[in-house]
Image (cartoon, rainbow, N blue to C red):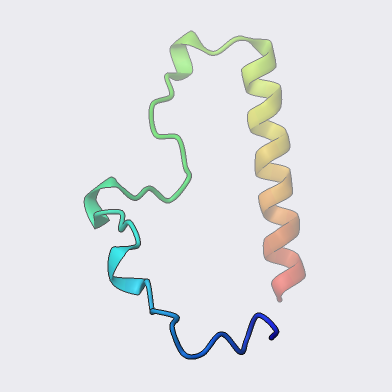
Amino acid sequence: MGRMHNGGSHKNNKSSLPQTPKNLKSDGNDVEYSQEFADHADLEAQARANAANQRVKNKKR
């Protein structure tokens, strides 16, 4: 028999899957950033990220 034909002995395992509470989910953005502690590499990375965001916004239009 193939994998799909196992005599109906399969179970739905959805109730035992782990769930992440909504208060622990994040949007992926780092919010702990201090401009006063930023060095040249941080400022350069921030400029690249802003440029990439602008390209994505312009592409969606």
